[in-house]
Length: 55
Length: 414
Image (cartoon, rainbow over all chains, first blue to last red; front, side, top):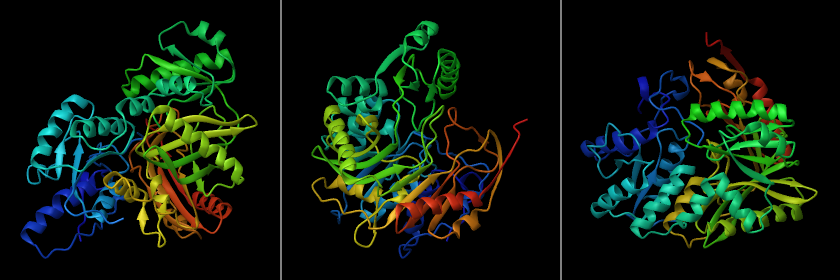
């Protein structure tokens, strides 16, 4: 389980960072790792790196 | 809908999208290798060069050159955009790589509300009477010539941003000044905007998937809150529609004609229409799925096991597969209205709202300390409420009840 803080908490790209970055890095050193559960309270973030906009 | 192993999908995800979670999860569920492209670099890009790439999303030629080189090393099976802008880029990149895609001219026509209006008008699709006018032109003359009530509409912004109704020439002048400010704030380089005759009548939305040019309807949504202006803030979407079947068929037929007129043949479309005594009116078609986090309201398959994004990606990678039917229950989403301008201090009552019957989730996407800006200037959602139930009436009532439980506290910006 992973809890994000700072600019990752509430960031619109947090899941990309987790799935495409952190998870892959950890699997390289822990091949038996099946996945990571994000337990971050993203709604509690106050200064996310990226905020979503209507597009 | 199992996908072949080890194919690679390039997903175009702007850093400001609401859809990253859903699309990344769907790609993982499909078992595909995934490359996420954004306009800004990820901290992990150097460690995972196959999985993360930075692309100039606003410069298709430069992006195409970079993707061609990338694909030499990591062959790509599909390129998918998630919003209006990346839908165009996806067509460019797919064309460069020889992958299935919509014709570029078709997605470009869909992207520009002005071009879309012209094409549809020429090809006999019922659209509101419109006129493209210069932002810096003689507004008093334009105000004297347009039909009232009318709607001022930017050509490239999304989600009702900048869309304003005017009933008189005086209101037109106020609306024009406001629209000019919105375009400046948005950094839009539009020097023209649309003025349309206001079309009365209830509004509906069709979520669809084009397969070899044929429209597969994924859902037809009622929008039960009247959208009569002066601003057009969307709130509740509920499916299935409560319209009589023959009326639904008229809307679907209009949507199909619209896609064909634009030349779209492939991938998701979100179509907004009105219906009145004269029949259906095409308000807008976008070559992308439904916006915000609203896609979460749709589930497919006999066990509700497929998300909308899964269906879209599954189609992008294996375009001849069938589309599983939507689950049997009614479902709805409320885009939580921004109550007033100011700084968001807190949203209370979220847990209580979640515990209401029929409510599946309440997601607050605005963060504490964020400046809230209502429509027509606003560019962000406050959050979303999701509900499922036996009937559309029940779902609508559940959404309203949950919304009433929210205590949205907004402070002054001073």
